[in-house]
Image (tube, rainbow, N blue to C red; front, side, top):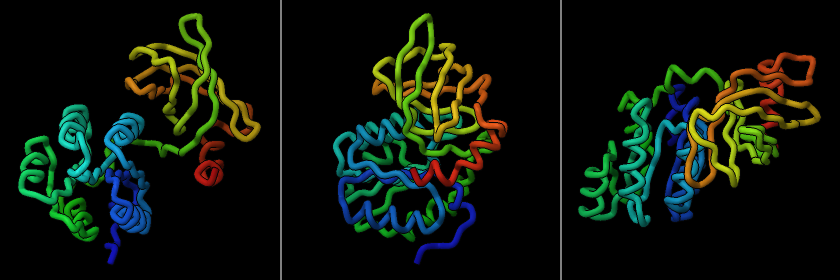
Length: 233
């Protein structure tokens, strides 16, 4: 049984495993809570997802190569709101490695979704960070970036009232100021912002300093109205 929890309904969760049955079980169970779920079959993909969005809970299969290093990196880079990390271990060696790397909890295989839910809810750490005021909507769309006299193209991965995540062959430095332009469902969105995080894999986070759109509605209202369409796209 999937626990009914209002605390879980607004979370962003990640399951990292290359075992299809495990992925399917967790994704199905978590979606029933209303939480936003991502899955990754490799540590490299998981690293990209953690860089591009804030996660509240992560379940990591210790059988994956680089799992311990991933846990350690995630723990060290999330000082202002680190996710709860639940490691899935099959041996005592994997359990010790997970705890040494910084996992909050270790569960033995075969993994029970109800056990993981209990750990997330009873830990008291599943509450979304209070600084997060806007919902990120998944959106893949071309965006034009203007910075330092250069113009280049990128792809968005999500969009919110306060900013967006992009991926590009060109990785801008932190605090780089820029202008941007994209078009969503015949509405032009443009403005100014700055890079607040980036990664070697080409992802970057842009915090908006000003934004405008061609729709008669103000940008926040337009985005909220488009939310269902953006999520379904």
